[in-house]
Structure formats: C-alpha cells, structure tokens
Image 1 (tube, helix red, strand yellow):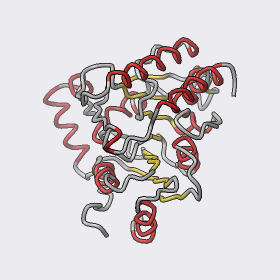
Image 2: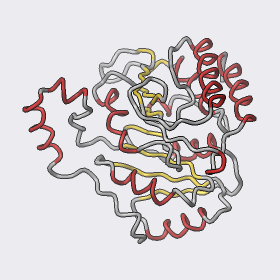
Image 3: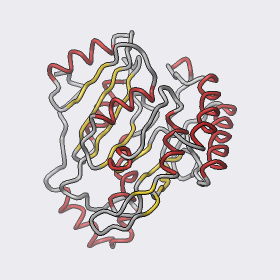
Amino acid sequence: MDSRTPSNPGVPADERDRIEQLTAWLGEGTCRRLGLYQIPEDLVLSVVIPVYKEMRTIHEILRRVRAVPIKKQIILVDDCSTDGTRELLQEWQKTETDLTILFHTVNQGKGAALRTGFKHATGNLVIVQDADLEYDPSEYLKLIQPIVEGYADVVYGSRFAGGENHRVLHFWHSMGNQFLTLLSNMFTDLNLTDMEVCYKVFRREVLQRITLKSDRFGFEPEVTAKVARLRLPELEGRPARKCRIYEVPCSYNGRDYSEGKHIGIKDGFQALWCIVRYAFGD
C-alpha cells in the first residue's frame, strides 16, 4: 500500500461525544452554523470520482477524501487515461479494498464516467468529486448538512456565493460560467449562482429517478434541468413534492491549462446546446 494512501479511517469512535460536548458549550444553533452536527450512524456517502490523466493529483485527492470523518464508499472511474493513472489504478484494484475502481475501454468524457460511477453507488447520499485538487473534500460535512437535516434533496456547492476562499484566475472563464448559469436559470426557473460547479450532492433516490445521457461536460446543465423538474413521489409518510435544491458556498483552488485543466471552449458550446435541449425533455 502506498504511504500516501492510508486506509479509510471511517468515523472516529469519539466523534459523537465531541460534538455533544461542543453543543453543550456553544449551543445547537451556533454549532449548526459552524457545520458541527450529528451524522446518522447509518449514513454512507458515495464519492464518485471521474479520473482522466490525473497522475499528479490522484494520491493527494484520495488521501483527502479518505480523511473526511464519515462513512464512505469511494468510487473511481478511469476514463481511459494515458499518463500512467490507469496502470496505477489497476494496481490499487488489487490492494486497496476500500476502493471501487472501474475502467472505460475508450475515452468517453466526464458525464459518461459519472454515469458509470452512479450505477455502482450504494450510499444514502452521492457526491461528485473531481480528481484534481480544485475542490476540498474537507467541505463534505457542510455540503451534506442540508440533506442530513431534512431541508434538501440536492445540494450544489457555489464558488460565487461568497464566504469562501478562491484562487484568482481567468476573467472570461468566470464570465462564461456565470453566463451559462444565468441561461440555465432562465430555462429551469432556479436561482443558482453556480450551475457548473463540480460539487453536487444527491439523495441516491434522486439519481435513480432521472436518466442522464450527456457524455462530457454537458452533465452539469443536463442534471440541473432534470432535478429542477423532478417530483419525488409519496414515500413512507412523506408527501409527494418537487425536488428541493440548496446551495452551499465552497472554496475553489482552480488550475489553469498549463496545470492540466481539461474543459475548453468547445465544452462551453456543448453546455449551451444541453441547456436548450434538456429544458424541454429528456
């Protein structure tokens, strides 16, 4: 086992006692605002990580994911990497028993890798995690909080909602993201601030009730359009209702193209097409 990929620590045995003590000192409301709350013992978070040519970052992102103090199912989907990542994951498949590692025989794109990962997700909640270091897994607890506390069915992170650090990068890339979010909002009647964000958390039943088709970065507008119009049926005393979507600020350590960023202008045009295509049906 590589020294940089320690075993999944799970949930520390004394975590519940520490939270109860902090709640007694600070009060429940303060602790909730700080993201300190009780995680149900039976909750499992499926972390789906699409991987494509991420040899430089795969060890560290996996270390950070494993370090999050919550029960997890970690799913890595290699989308036919050619930089050595695929061979590394093939070795891990033999030795890393806490990982579910899947392989595409041809490069298909992020959306296709996520579909593969979603099919193997068994946790109560499912989160999307990029394999680079742009997003920080230490924020999982605050991202899942609205769902755990019963307020949401889907949670989007937001790089633009304020309150978190972010790396200063390209102006036009930021404008493009905000334009795509605005256009998506016009068709979905949502008021998201960051439709293109990586961090999206779903109740697993939400993903089971929608059919995703986009192979590349069209996943973002497609899944947004489909959860926006999704109605969850009555279940175990819960009334039928529209899917509830929340946003939570998240930090962002963006990388530029010299550091391996994959998304480009062609993906922006594809996102435009997907916004229109999925606004009116599947």
